[in-house]
Picture 1 (cartoon, one colour):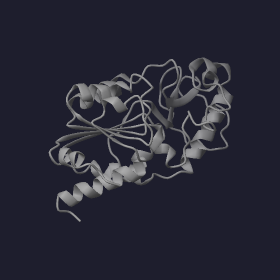
Picture 2: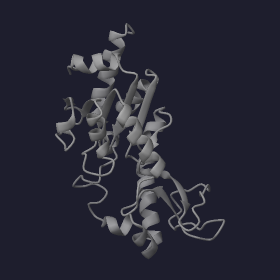
Picture 3: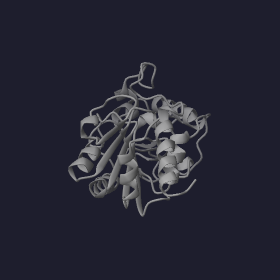
Picture 4: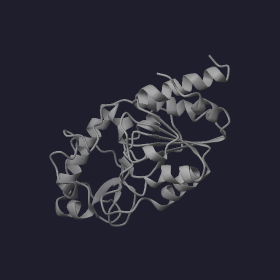
Length: 249
């Protein structure tokens, strides 16, 4: 794989770097994307499993399905892309990692202060009073638990269909995208808004935008460079070339 010199040169001069990731990087760890023919939505209606209405209609079904998703995530490991991004985070004065993923594989790879646009699947809170639910959850817990404070139903801390993204996370993501010297977008199709606006914001603000995705996407036309490789191949190579140019072997 040949990394364009312009990417490495831009990184050598960069003080503010942003990496924005989507489901594709998790797919490389074995977590299928929702759009895969055999992915998580293939046999289910999203409105029945990932919405407040669906949860209220059948909370135990939804809870059990999310338990299944947690089991899948716990059986997977971060891949070389996750680890390379975590290593890159140490190399720049300002580095922001923004993700649409809810699996926390970035954190397991060592990344810090991750901006989670869609929440995460490992935490839970009360649907009624919003109190975090800190009790441990196991595979045997197939029924939605009840809040210790008010008795309300406990739900996963993910953003469901019809819900807005966490305001603080979105504002932070937009701010760092606007100020980025180099902006990487990796493993995302650019079809889910408002997150899909971030590469556009970066491009319009003068960032060098690098897309890492085996396929052309809606983001491609905004990118200065398109690397048609999986994240697990591209990021380690970028890190290697960057360190080589810095004289670190």
